[in-house]
Structure formats: structure tokens, C-alpha cells
Length: 454
Image 1: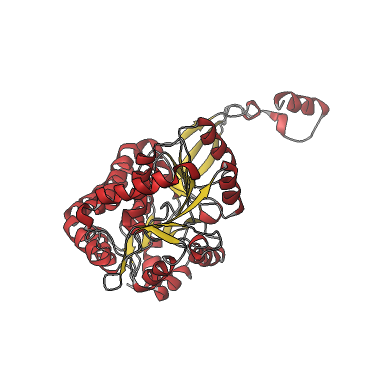
Image 2 (image 1 turned 90 degrees about the vertical axis):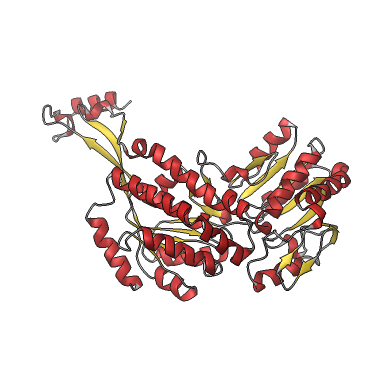
């Protein structure tokens, strides 16, 4: 079907009310889960084709997270859908008040290429759970995965309910010209501006999951061996092509050399005998050339190698980096980690405060006062103390950015809320009709109003 026809048919289907019953929503979630399990081999093959992504990493960061999210929604959706009773002012007696959740309607989900399955299906789970219809737009930069997503959704759902539109910029532009009840976009801040501008023409609310330069701070009280391993994990995962990757690091001068040693050891453990053949490659030539140019900043104390034929960048640790270097001026989105040496924590805070709010922040320290100081002074989407990345791998906490790193959040209950409107409803009775609010206004009525509204 053409885009306009898909949208019109979804509009008509939503009006039938078919998506509203909890039984329907649960059935659709279960069918999506079954389709993912049945196509796990095809998903793994597509990930390998697009990004050289190892099957274990695919499950850990893509299919496993999606299946866990579905399980969480199935467990909690009954409670989320119930009306919630709230207090009613005495002046409105004998009325009762409640909040009633209803699906927003027709939604557009625009997914990126770096986690092409997870970042496409995770918001879709929220849309299904909330009772919406959806148009899903996978990324053209991961064509094999896009094709698998189209197959899974096309074989599982009717297009009148959930449809996939594949393609590139032309299809993106055509979709953004249409009116939706909500747009969920994950991608770069630059494209986020375009999405928000297009949405504003229809007064369409948006969720923007963007990115930015997420800092790591390692102080002199941290367990350097564990810190190095966990930072290396966050930087090597998906070859650093993660919106919450540790982008750059402030390292206390007293532990810098030890950190370099432990970071190198961690990489040796990750890649026995130096075999990095199962590590992700950079998604395409454009991004590969950009990341490769960043290797020229500072000096590589670990790594620095690359393979043009494979689009492979070796995990790299840079020192002698200046704030003005290109590697500190743009989101790296690759396995390159620049180090900035510090003595005073306030230096780190001043830099973070002076720049755009990051999507994530990671702090490694045993010092509780340092933890308190960072949390009180630095604004960021979310993060970890003494770890990296893993804060987003749970349905029990919402995930999202702030400022330039995004707006809105999802995961777990937050995904349901994102695609839900909560109606405030007051239900009154015909049994009693207090005359106090009606004209004519009198001094006695005013005194009573003042008394009850104190």
C-alpha cells in the first residue's frame, strides 16, 4: 500500500475500537514475541551482514531486551489500563474523580541503524501495549535488518494495524508530511530538529531519543581494574555505535597510568590472541571515514589500527587530547576513547555544565560526596555509578534524554505512558445538587466557598 493509504486505513481501523481491549493487546504482544523467536536465526544473519554483530551480542543488546520488555508488559498491562481513582475536593461533593487511560491513536516510529531491531521494536511494544496503531520506519543504513523487520511485522500483523515502510530520505520525508497522533524518533540531534519541525506543522507531540557526548569520570578512589573493564565493555559494545556509549573520559592524574595498563589488559581478555574478527564493524563508509579521521587527535596509547576493507576500527585509547580537537567536538560513535587528565573534580563539572546536556554520564568512585556532588551539579538523561551502559537494560526504569539529548522517555511503564493520554474525569450524581456554585452570588455563598477552599 502507498503511505497515504496505509495511514487512512489505520485511521479507520483505530476508530473501530479493535485495539482497545486488553485481550487484543496481549495477543498482539504474544504474537510479536513468537515471531521474533521464530526468526531469531534470520535476525542473527542480518545483523552479521549489516554490522558483523556476534549472535551473543545480538541477543544481549537486541532480541533479548525486546523479549524481556514484552514479558514485562504482559505482566503489568492489566494494572496500567485500569482507571485510577483520585481525591475529589469537598466543594464537588458527591462527585468522584478518576484518571482514565486511552490510546493516543496512530503513531509513527522512526528507528536508527545502530541497534536496528531493538530501537525499532522497543517503542512498538509500548504502542501495542497502549492500544495504538503504528507505522514503523526502519533505518535504510541497516538494509538486511530492515528487510527482516518488514518480514516479521508483515507476516504477523495486518497493515491496517501495524505497517512497515522501508526506504531512505524520500520515504522519511513523505511520512513526516502526514499527520500522526505521536511521533517517536531515535537518531541524531540534527535529524531530530527536522522531525520536530515537521511535527509542529500538525501540532503532533514527539518523543526524541537523541544522543550527545556522554562523559566518564574516574577518580582516584575507584577500583581501576573493574572501572577499566566496564568502560572497555561500554566502548567496544557495538563498536562504540551506541547512543549512551562512554564518549570521552576524565581520568584523575594519579591513576592515569594504571588505567591505561588495565584498559589494555581488559581488551586482551575480550579478544584472546588479539583476534577481533567477531567485533562489530562501522556501519558504512561515511561513518567509517569520519571515525578514522578522529584517530589523528592526540596520541594512541592503545590501539589506533584500522582496516579499510572491513570498515574496522580497533579499540583505541587516546591521550594528549585537547578540548578543541575534533574528537571532543562531535559525538564519536566509534570505539575511540579520548582521555582528559584532571586534578580537581570541579574541572570536570565545569566542562560538563558548559556543554549540551549528555544522554548519559558515568562516574567511577568510592567517594559518596563525589557521587552527591556530580548528581547535584550535572544534568544528563541517565547513567551509572561504577558501571556503563547497563542502566538502559531494565524495564523498571524509564530511559530518555534531556535538553539536546532528547525529550520524553520509554521502557516499561514509561513506554505505555508515552503512547497513552490520561483523561481526567469527574463523575457526579443527580442525588444532590448543592446551590452554592449557582447565581445569584451572595455574601453567604462567598463565605462558604472561602471556607471550603482554604
